[in-house]
Length: 123
Image (cartoon, rainbow, N blue to C red):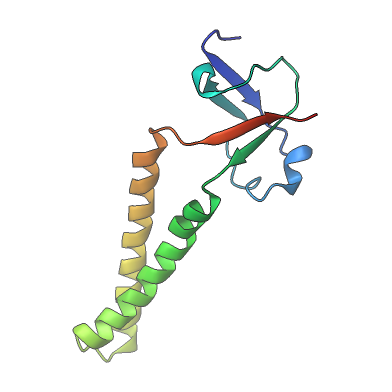
C-alpha cells in the first residue's frame, strides 16, 4: 500500500459489466493520487467510478475518423476535381489514417494530464 496513491482493482467480470466503458478499460488496476480523492477509503471497500467526459472521448475516437473519411472524398471531388472513384477512396483512406494519427496524438498528449474521475463509496 502506498502512502500517496490509491490502487483500485477493477472487476470487469462482475460489477463493471453494466458500465458502458467496461470494454475500454485496458488496465485492471487504476492508480490515483490521494490528493485528487475527496474521501478516505478502506481496503476492500466497493466504490463506483464515474468518468465524466465519455461524450467528448467518444466523439474524438469514433466521429473524427469518419468525418475525415468523408472530408477526404469531398476534397478529392470538389477541391481537386478528381472524378476517379478509386482515387477518391484512396484519398479518403489517407485522410482516415491522418485522423487515426491525430487520435493517437491527442491520446498521448492528454493521457499525461489529469482527467476527472468521480469516486464514490457504494453503500
